[in-house]
Length: 273
Image (cartoon, rainbow, N blue to C red; front, top):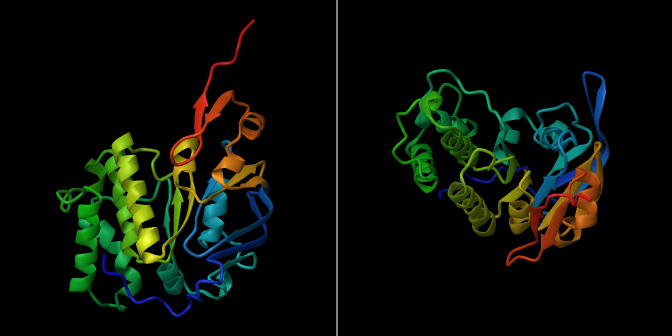
C-alpha cells in the first residue's frame, strides 16, 4: 500500500509511540480512569482487556485526542496538546465501536474521508488518494462495495469499512476499539492478519481493546488488564492471561491452555455440588 509522507511530528523509533502519565478521566462527574501510566513502544501491538465498564474505550479515546486529557498524553514524543487536528489525524487513526455514519454515504466516499488530512483546503482527492482507497477495499474483501450505501451493509461489512477508512489515513498509530466484535471468524482473522502485516512491514503501532481473550493473546506483544479504572496487570499474554487474574477480575470460571501463538482462554461452567 502506498503510504503518505511521514509527518514531521513523528520522532525516531527509540521514542515511544504513546506515553500516558497520570491520566485521569471523569465523565459527567463520574471517575472512569484514575492514574493510568502506560508506555507503548513504536511498532508494538498492545491490547487492553478488562471487564465491562473497566475504562478500555475511554483510554483509547483519551489517547486519540477525543477526550480532554492533553497534558497526560504524548504521541511519538509530542504532547497531544501541541498537535493540531490535521497533524493528529496524520499520526493517529481510531476505529471506534460505533462510528457516526453520514446518512446516504457510499462506501467509497466514506473511506475517502480518511484521506482528508492530505487534501488541501477546497481541494479534491488525487489519483494517489483513490489508489490507496481502492487497494484497501480490495484487501478487506470490499472490492465490490464501492457504490453501496453504508446503511445497507451488514455489521461485519461496516466494521471492515470503518477499518479501511482508518487505514486510509496512513497514520503511524492505529487505535482499534473492539475491531472484530461484528465479524465472523474468517473475517476476524483476515482483518487482524492485515493489521499485523502492516505493523510488521510499515512500522504501524497498534493499541486495541478486545473482548475475545484468546484472539487478543494471539496477536498482542503485550497486554494491559484494566479493572475499575486502573491497571491491574501488564505484561506478555502469558503473564496476563492467567486463570487467577481472569477469575478474579472477570468473576468468571476459565481454563487457560497453551496455544501455538498465545494462551487460549476457555470459559467453563462452574462446578455444582
